[in-house]
Length: 161
Image (cartoon, rainbow, N blue to C red):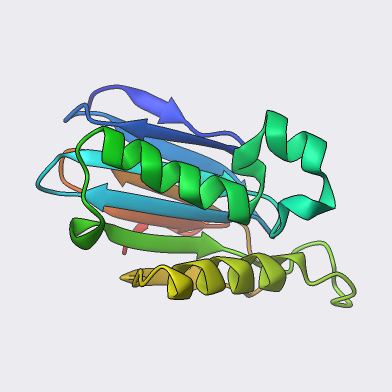
């Protein structure tokens, strides 16, 4: 395997290197959005933390990937700059669990998921696969060359999506 690119919390990465793999860890209430264009050989992963940049406009300017409403448009724009096309992108969404908020007081995971779905609906983007909700932590990986997306939940074996 080639280069391993780790996508941190509130960050994103795009790549067009065939042997590269994008990985993001620690998906609790956060959501990961993985996109891949097989024809252009472009892949990207966004690890967003919060649904709406209005919660902290200053932070959204510094780290737009933290928020669904600023991170998603940036992820797609940057993939297009690398040759991806909207109609060819396979989109996978993972995370949005309720790990530390056992009473559901804040529902950050559900709010993140609702924000992503709303943005995709407005932009006519379909989700090909998802693994969201529950009370587990997840890790997501995307192999740029093949487009293979895998997730690992807690201590379970990785499985393909």
